[in-house]
Figure 1 (cartoon, rainbow, N blue to C red):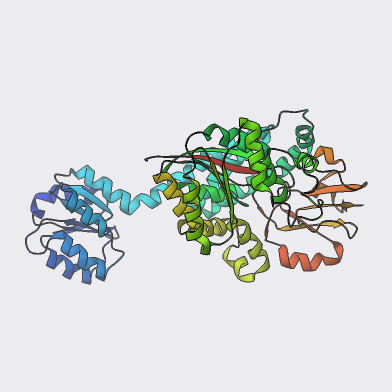
Figure 2: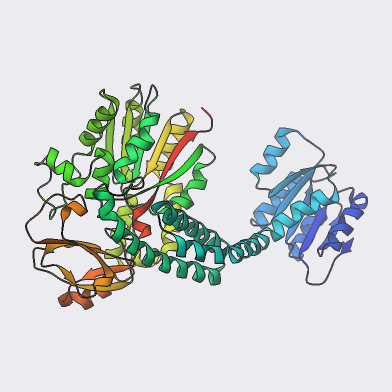
Length: 525
């Protein structure tokens, strides 16, 4: 039996009782599908070798070859064929075997015509339906997003808008709506400009206590980790240099194992590891750390060893917050090659009741720095979309994901965050400075430091406006805004060629400053 429309999606229905299913076939035909029906597995395989079909509806219990036997042969000959198994059996074994052989869906007889249509539509039309729906949803939301940008006046409002734009960017890219991505990117450009103006105005007020700040790097442990510290061990995981969109594509992989409570914090300036990560571990701004421990930092010009005391800073902060000594196991992880060793030590550490396991993962930071130095990495992660796709691929196979699954199975809670994000930089901004200025491309400290175009940077001359340690008299502080990177006039061409399109951090942008904090609670112990 063959029914259908010319040019319609083609369905092959294989069932020894196919004559009883004529109403189902006609129902699908009336919905625009071409349906061929056949009563046994051998004839079905012969037909499948001659004709292309978009979907096979396959009865499991037939005389001769059972449906699962037909499926096994079909998978060898046509690995990507889409198959729905239909059976009278409700036994778990049959369903498990069918799923194990990669059926796209499983239906139990008697299935109504509408049940069958629902499954067929989801498999054959689901992608285009979702694509159309995402496009319609964004189109209806676009004007509101523009109004929200114009009206944003607080740290929370900027963060909410930024997070929604990130979500739209991820969803539209997944739906292959490249035209609408341009609209999101234009909103991002406007948001970065407004955000830079906002931060220049309010950041010194936050630092001097004249305006209530949002949750900052200094607040992460007290607000998110401290409520979880108790009888059970708790994890603090910091993924160095993680953007919000990178977290957005990682979160769905964790959802089966954890209930996820997503929040955000603002990274302090500079949005760079020596400052923002020390602020997380200590609960203090850099000027306070330098006052308490003057020997730890040799000065703001040298960053190489400025994160050597994170474990001590965390222990001191927890003692300050709890009034007692809290056991802390701390480790930085640079390479997947150390996976077994790290997991063994972590398993030993969690045997201590009430402790904190603090782990720093450097993959994302290493990735963007390697990208800037390597043409191969530059091509692999050429833009935001490819960077987050690469992040997801890494995370799926990483020691971190394996560790998190083990943590969930043991019923332990996790606070997962980052010290700062990064931004895709495309425009150079020329700066003039003496030779003693710092070398960073998104921020610089030094004497007689100025930008050729002042609108491209946030400049400050008083370290109290930034809560940075006091430096030499006459030191200026410059942070790149939007997607600018800082270059000297003598190296303009060299730096443009080398760093245009690089992911950098240290400056003022939503991508660098507004970063995720997720509290993960295991679904099942």
